[in-house]
Length: 518
Image 1 (spheres, rainbow, N blue to C red):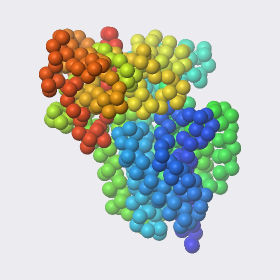
Image 2: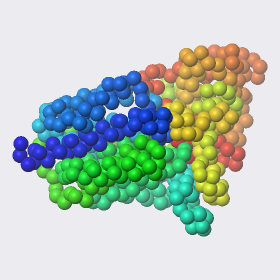
Image 3: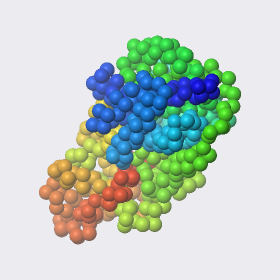
Image 4: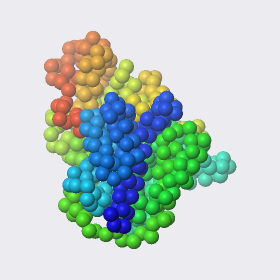
């Protein structure tokens, strides 16, 4: 094998080892803590009995055997991902995008896998980061009183800055946080495209900030997912990272001592490996010989649809590329440039797009729509001083069942009521309760279609529809009509496999903007 072929094999080995660490990370946390260390850790399931050994073998073997194990492991993981839809984390969609490209590249033969895979994955990463930034161009994210950017930066500021400095500068930090967060996210894909090494370092620093965020926003799963792939933004010189693996292992060991979390330690290892690759690489332009323009185009188009088109059409909400964006996916768009939920508006019956305000609920329906406190307490103080609620709505975490693993308990008494949800989501939730033999108790008001802001939703006074634990439904003590939303069948399976919309939480005094949710 020539020097070029050996370098490509080392680059593929580097990717395979980082990918294996990403796959194994939740298992390491189970061993270390007994629970998932990050709030957004990839859930372990029966399929991991097959996936984890395959990933480990892919990292340990070399040459053709390693490639075969990597290909098989990628296929198994994609099958597990598809089976769990729509209950997946957004970063799992990012991972699946590049994993599909790897499978397509490897399926064409063992020769030239790197040349086919690397450009396709790099294009995908640029689009994913661009999409995440783009959807934050909305009025609710840019308002410091509701922005998720304010929440996360206030947490990090309160947790890690000297107390005197933190207190003095907190008013400025909380007001500028949305613009700082948006500016930082816009810079990432631009730098990664034009100045790969600089973009790589900026992305790693961004993910370090994310992985350091206190509960409920310790999104270590997202950071580990991305850190395992950032090496794809470099040419073949990524293989040079293998020469610095001992330093990375030492760094990971120190990280474990600092924060008892495999997610943090894994990120630290990936951080050091990727940084060493960037520093050691001269960043000469890689050879395009053997690259596949068709694969790159197909991968880019598919990723563009996920990152930019699905929210516009209204085909995906939870797990979309709008994480922490305060984006209104239904009930009227708050984006500065684009509409959202077009198909939901065009086909209201199929998509169950009528809005409801749920004023009372008990049991699972309440526990899946809750507020949680923001840590540390000083961050809450900063937020409330800036006219922010100082709380965070966590329907995503509740549905994925990971918030408890992160040490923040979900309790029915923390229910975020009232909430506004679509008829689609109410029908889906009630069907889940009925299938599991649980009772439902709630009261809701149907909202006119021309109401599109939290203030209007709160102000509306309509007839209350009550769903009782025995399954009956009444309106003003009279039985509901047969076509009442609570009595309708669940949405079609083809749609619920993609679309899982979560509600908007309401608080007294709300105006036009929606609160941060995750």
